[in-house]
Length: 115
Image (cartoon, helix red, strand yellow):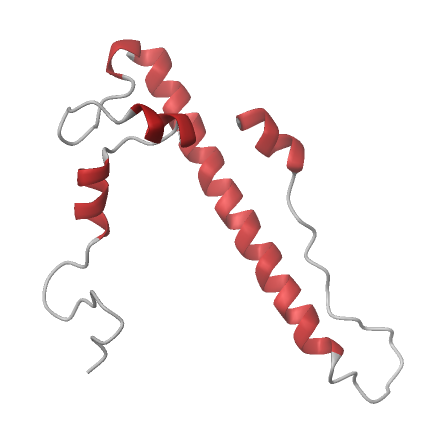
């Protein structure tokens, strides 16, 4: 998985066209260029985060192979299917869900909680 991500490389973020000629800007093309920049930037950031998590998982595997596949918070075994899909995870589903839920007052849990 690490080799695949490294082989893919970052997406190029195309700059907005600047030909040096002062002319009427292409109002239709600019939003598309900006959208492509956002998509490429987001993909590159996500890719870098996954690579870092893979490196951390490989380090955990080297340092303590017997603990690989165990949740770092509760110590329970992480489901095999979860590890198969994301071998770099360090939390079981329950601990990940408790981390992902909004904490404290004011946290949104549903789309209707905007009031």
